[in-house]
Length: 114
Length: 112
Image (cartoon, rainbow over all chains, first blue to last red; front, side):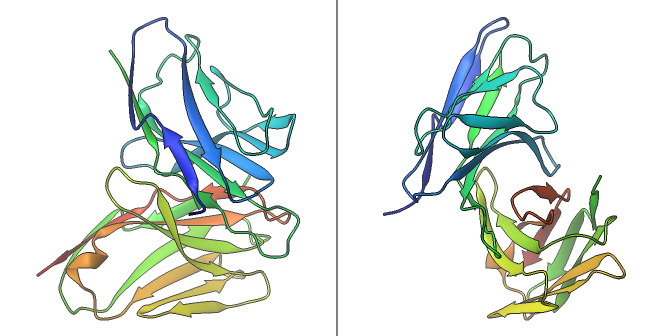
């Protein structure tokens, strides 16, 4: 089955702690994305990567970091510098460079700060 | 910078009703537009993708249109069912097609 997996489904973080959210895809997609969704709101782009070993900041990158060492994996670290990290985090992937682009989304990780 | 707005934020209708969800965007240079469905606590499922050169797309009871000149897209749902209850989000992409700007979504409830 091809798709995008995110883990864990629920994550709890203490104040001052870094946590890492996992995102894996077996769709052979080049591009991967991380979004944040707050209650009743749309998605905002945190980081994106169009190719291995390269990534770009999105609209709200402060307090977050990413790596892209493998095509299949794009982990997101929420650092202690992110002052309001409680949110629903969604990972997506797509194949850029085509006339038609469609993003596929994972099931999400809900992060709560205790 | 592209801004995408969805009105209404919430909508409740009786089963069987035809309905229209609205999406407006500020930059007419939008490349393509997607409509997504999101169930509570879940990821997004792509419903319809309207390419740059197209004006509408249809899938079953769903029809989406795109009017770049007026900065609007609509999602038409025919003969609504309780299973259609979800949040519907629209998102426009830039001319490279790889960056999406999302609206805030419309939360739809279809009552039996």
